Image 1 (cartoon, rainbow, N blue to C red):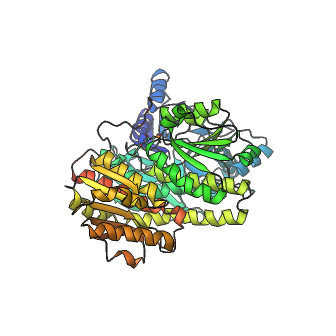
Image 2: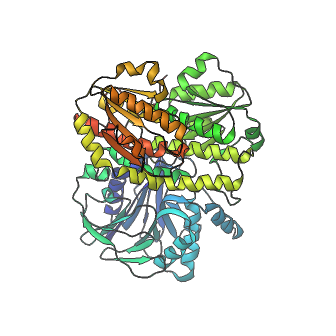
Image 3: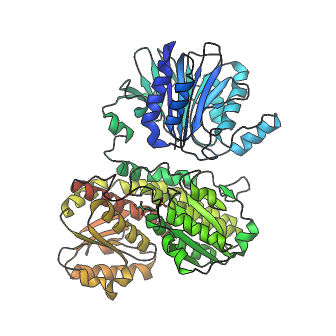
Length: 619
Ligand code: F6R
């Protein structure tokens, strides 16, 4: 996820760059590992300033060497997906002939093919990004008819994946062109000047009149008008709307908290994590790996090291990877791993899971594993982070930056990445055939839509939180992959609502926790699908045991599972036919929403809970 801004005014001035920088400042929540701006000077050349690190690095560079006055500017704040956060990989990218500058948000899935076409023409890439292939192809298209809009449409038709693109043409400095597919783009309409942005926060200081663009459309933006077309060049229209949010809310996309916004982004986080994972050979691919396929074939044990929520994603991985690959998987809290003298060797694959990539406990566990000769594969959300750098192989989650301290969208993205790893190993080691893996991937690709459906129950979840806001204890119970979800739900409640909450494996109930049950205690059950009768029946018995002792029973169950109705006070539904192993992706969302609403009902600061930090960089 990246932030994009574009500005076109009537006259050349410093204002273009100022508006772009102001927009980028507001968009930094979308990504902040590098940033850049570009303008066209009166000398007819494109000037680019781009830097790794926060936007302030660009601002400092501009203070020393200002860009020339210009009537337009484009800007970008990056969250790396292809290539680490370096000056070279930062946007805007310039075409080989210097005619076009381009910024991009999304993932271009056929970047490898586009790069080899460029290589055939002798055009070398200067960065490791997928974006750079697009800017060179755009320049090649533009050379055909000098029409930036038509060239952008032809480029868009060539690209696979998701993209918002904004480009400027050195030879036509009075307009910019943007295009979108599966990635956001809005147009801001001002007085004698116009804007584009990833969202309205890019220009909300300047205008509140905006246009929403349909999927697969391109827009030609001048200072006094805009032209919108589909990718075949047919005229189409945007949907006008007025921004009635405060600037603060605009950054949160209209949501009151980042936590809510990030829960709502879960379908996208999963979709982006899955995107572009099949190579042209039909095989799954990792982002980077110095681990040979032979080493992957020889491993006889996997140990997942992680902390908190990331460790719970690891528990889900255990169920999936053991089932698909028949390799034993242990899950170890990273801070415990190093100090207990674990049995690891060159046949052990250590999988480190981390959103921030900077958790010191996890870094130390990785170092220990590598000292013992193990290979380390990292599942990380932050490009260029310490864990990504120190690992032997990396599988990035593409959840975008997570700002709220409590992890939500990163959790589902981590689970999706773990499934990908399991399927990668299963295929490589011959546990599953390519077509079987493709079937699993088909199911995985249905998950974003299923999560979306679950999130639609939000009004009932809010009502439940309001009803239960004065309770001071909560119990969450699940079995099989529902167990890590129970642990995660309890953690979320503790973290943001400051209530005592316990997560247990439902089968453990009779071994102790049942003593906690008293009249009115809220007990949440994650009920397995009735298609797994042996699991379902056991959890249903637990539901009855708890209900008989007076608990307030809330159930997350599959659509059509009527057996729970009789015993539950409230039932939340997950879509029918979700494969059992993939259930956590849909069952966790209502529980995260519940924790959020409970905290809000108590009037707490959801995004910054007391005593916690987003990145735990000390042991
Ligand atoms: C819980 C939470 C923490 C993190 C843990 C690991 O909501 O955010 O439990 O999951 O501190 O952090 P990362 O994933 O950055 O290594």
